[in-house]
Length: 141
Image (cartoon, rainbow, N blue to C red; front, side, top):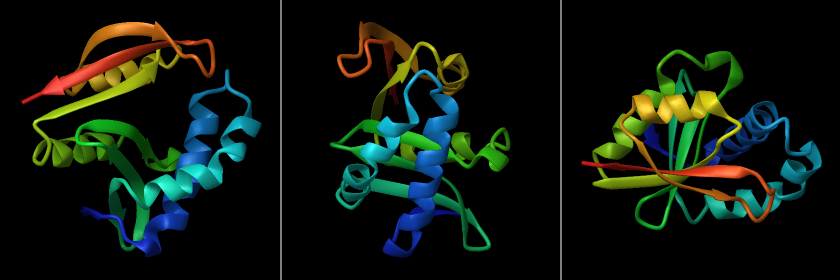
């Protein structure tokens, strides 16, 4: 089931956020993710966050900032490759006529996932925070 995140989901969302970032970005020190944890947690409260859960267990979430930017889409490691990310994107596409995001080029699995879900690379730049290539990707209805 997908629903707008509530305060009761926040701890689960943040655990998924931390664990998935560490696993998906081995080229970024774990200490970075731990260092911005509280800042991201605060940002969650002012973003549109949708959670996918089964039996009250959060298995994934997507966070939208502004009117169209996907700040993150994360699925718990044990629940990946089960269509949860696709379901979250499909849900968002019902409410947002345009979605965009940035993804590290060094994460080809994520790039393929977004391309398979209708996103196109519209540009590539070097991330000022990490000195790593990022693709800017856009989907439009």
